[in-house]
View 1 (cartoon, rainbow, N blue to C red):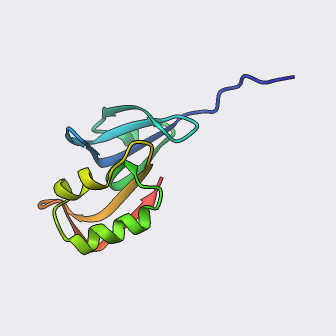
View 2: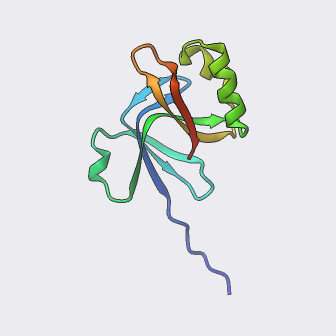
Length: 117
């Protein structure tokens, strides 16, 4: 017997979302069972939504699968994220969150970290 039970989607919220068109503030992403972003919207109060995970920082979909090496290269380049991310992001990559940013200049700091979602 086969089951057609759909895996539940994940909802992820953060401070910012990077897109090729620009930054989205207060993003709320709905992820499919395979981790792909199905839907993105802005939600200023995600803590009021049940079953929503919150990650402080900048969500970046499409990061290279070897995200730690790519992040290391970004640290070395020491340029604003607005210049680095268009060069790094690819279609079919993974969703990451980058935390510990200088939000005013949108640059990495010595405290910046990356985490795969």
